[in-house]
Length: 271
Length: 257
Image (cartoon, rainbow over all chains, first blue to last red):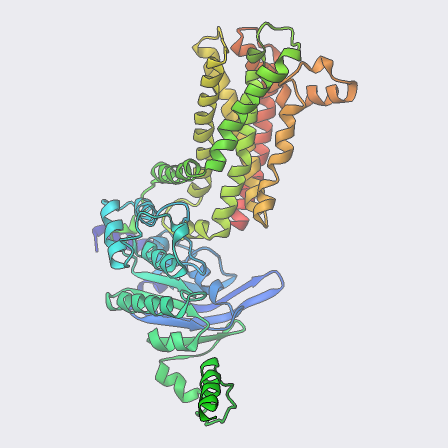
């Protein structure tokens, strides 16, 4: 921590100072779009260095929470403190300490992968933008495609580049809004691996997802958001206690094409 | 946590944004054709095909024509400004920039600056081709600077109109539609033929719309004629359109992007 950090403390309020090990503190967050009451009082906390999953169906309010925490949207009421800074009082400080990967890969298709990364590094005012870009391309397995236009990338490659762009400048907290929606299973596994590596390097990750499996695979803590409220939150073990017990069911299964083929061949040979 | 003190990098950030959009332009053959090749093709068409039959009361038709062609080149570029802004909004690029520690307006101004720089480049190319085709001007440096100033103001006025369209459009097609009415203005003006030859109502429209005084002012400056009140009218039109469109566009930007 530089001396600038110490000096800037005096204009922070009390609530902002008492939370050294919390990356996010959200209290009583409310937000409406005209008639639509999207968030009806959301509370949660995220520990530094953990992976926190917001699980919920489409329209539950996940993206709205992410937008408020990343200073894109202002809440109607309630508090949100990110990395020790109130999002409404010190949005610039919040922006300097976070990174957002939105729901749709926000990559520039006309530029190459390398140019995308160099651009973000320049906008974050880093010393050696080309070197930063080169390192991230290597880390994300994009070195071979680095000088191709992003328009030629697959969905998985775009997502990897998107996340790589969020890592430029070493933000302490990364928001991933539905990072695997629309990806094929292989690309999904790749993204999961990246997220696990991120957390291992000490970055705090808040991710939103519609898939329980994804939250299970990745998150230290899971909060389930439903109709603008967090209905449960805790570790996977906590949540599992609340799930209905596993049932054994017998389901009629359609034969696969392969099974049909084998059975026809088998009959012919028997004749 | 050394980044706590946020410095103002507005100009540097704008430079990065400019570099990005200029790459978009240079990598889009479509854009280059529309903003540079098309005006040149029109100039060739009017000078070598139609020009012989057009009587403007001047010795050289290309000298008469060039100001209008310059405005058409600018007008042609407007649809692309709108299109680029729309895509940035739709693809979440603005969101990415807005969640970073850079000035919120840098992304928008980057597009405006790009419109100025790219139009300056295409206009220089058009003027060079005109020189090859026989365009000559006795105008001095000051007159040329004044012409550049008028063209910059005209570009800004149209760019802010395009920004409103691009930021509020719901689809790509909607974003580009703004270009069509703007394309028509130079056609119904003194750009190609003197307005005196037009029938009453058309002439009334042509003489009272912004393009005619702008064309006349540029023509007067380039031919070393006294500019008169046309220059004032031209500047007033540009400034008024620019201010109104700027206010509307920044309003939409705050709300939508």
